[in-house]
Image (cartoon, rainbow, N blue to C red; front, top):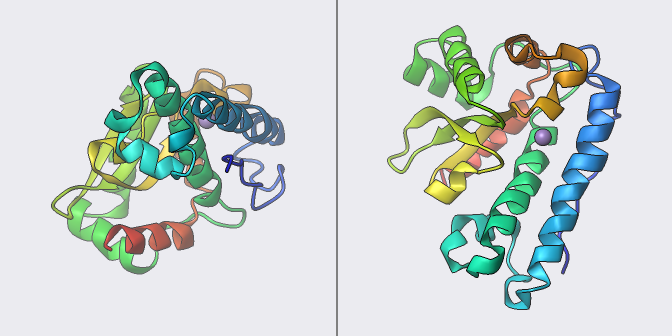
Length: 204
Ligand code: MN3
């Protein structure tokens, strides 16, 4: 059973003007499709792993044969990260958090602005390509972290509630080198309904 790139849940232009159409086309159709294709190619060398979900693979990378471990980590991570990323963005979204995650953010970080600054700051300081995350840790506490490349926090035992892609391919066409501007504007498309779903899932 091959891994498949999920379709975007909205039009390529739906996140304008914050995320431009061409970036969405390239990001989804070239980058995400590339990760999925390369993940499937790597798994051809380990057919016993083909029945596992990409999440299961990432949670136990130590069980992946060394010859394909880096390929699974990078491309499996790329696939899982982007599948989440498309869903935690939406048109006509943005604004302050709603639902249970709003209370959790307030209790953990003080207020929404403090949280936003912390998440953006982790993304800004991530050297090179990577992601900035809100995760639920082993003890059930929320925390902000960043990861390099396509590493997903689930490989370290964390539950990724939300993450923002800070690879240049996510913002360079519109924001050029201004990663900070992209991170600021990103919050105009944040989809709290989906993030609440993931927060609920993280507590199971
Ligand atoms: Mn990306």
